[in-house]
Amino acid sequence: MTMERVLRWLVAAALVVDAIIHLQQASQMQLAAPGGIGGGTLFRIQAVVALVAAGYLLWRGSRLAYAVAAVVLMSVCAAVVTYTYVDLPAIGPIPPMYDPFWTRPKVISALVEGAGALLAVLGFWWTSRSVSPARHG
Image (cartoon, rainbow, N blue to C red):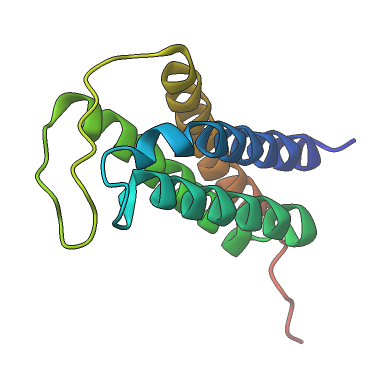
């Protein structure tokens, strides 16, 4: 198995772990706004986006696929850290989701998202290096 393929599977695994944790935590996050969009709905949407990004990365393995994976993982990692340390008010239909406690699922999620994002950036770089330029002649 090539290094790029190992990297691709590791990033996809990070996205899948992220999706599983978000799906498991969704019902608890919905309690903040049971009748509105709620954190649970956002968690479910994020899980689907992560799974789609993982599938796309495994299917294509292109620079764009790594970029999508990196954006998904970086954005969710930034969100978990932000909502842990900053008590943001509701933003439009998005409810306030301040949670200052580091639970086991939250720690695992943040670590996997951060590591996955770094690996996705590495995959993006690696993929750009492994493509040989077209020769015109």
